[in-house]
Length: 281
Ligand SMILES: NC(=O)c1ccc[n+]([C@@H]2O[C@H](COP(=O)([O-])OP(=O)(O)OC[C@H]3O[C@@H](n4cnc5c(N)ncnc54)[C@H](OP(=O)(O)O)[C@@H]3O)[C@@H](O)[C@H]2O)c1
Image (cartoon, rainbow, N blue to C red; front, side, top):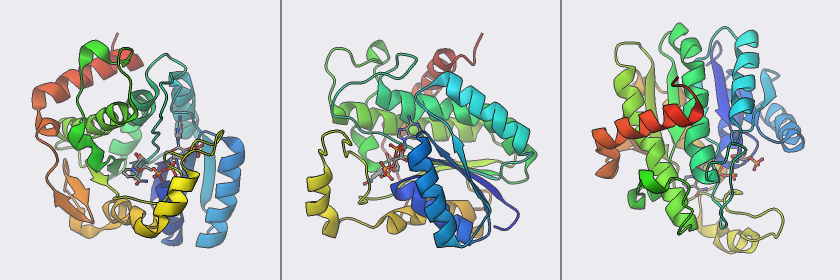
């Protein structure tokens, strides 16, 4: 990985931090895209120390803001002439309905729309580099996800699982549609389920909600490093050279849900996403 430039979103915590550490250990140049300066700087120090690498950098990017993502991509392009691996890892799961800066329901806004815009804005850099790889961290929760275009804001009946599962279904629909669009370019895109991992996912920093549950469940969950194994595999393995448009679990391609293969749904989601993030005139 010595000559590779790798960008990881949500790299200050959980699966993202473990992915960043391991890829840095392998010699890659790592850009940790994080939303919070303090948490980002603390994690940067830890990743550099643990990997014994100085080729790790922090760049701030809040995926809940379209203007922030645009600004991030401009700075990224000024600094880096290539991007070999993009890992769309950041994610939120929220018990109460919240909105992004642009007024989207937060889970769809960050987990899907944010990464949709980021990836599209970085596509030139990715296609410049030979055999670039895009990796989208989804979840097995996508299986119960439903996308109802008439209620993208989930204004009527919000619940955590409904919002989370549809955002994770959107990650897979996006992966498969992007793979179709990137055919012949040399750039591949795959997605994955990391398994059940002990991270900060679902922990409410203000109330501490979730911390206790995490403590109780910890023994049954994977460590962040175990949870990062499939992201690392997709970023580095020769076995997946040229493989695109697949869903992985435990470093093997597996079947995703029936609706994730719905091409009309994927195209509609693509068109709607392009419009809402401002990529279509
Ligand atoms: N843990 C599991 O069991 C599990 C299972 C299936 C799938 N996943 C997926 O795995 C991925 C990684 O999650 P994790 O479990 O490692 O959870 P985590 O420890 O909570 O990490 C999530 C990361 O996303 C970042 N993030 C949240 N909102 C953001 C925003 N608006 N802009 C930029 N970054 C933002 C967080 O930043 P802050 O630290 O600043 O909040 C954090 O760095 C997610 O996509 C999740 O859906 C996890």
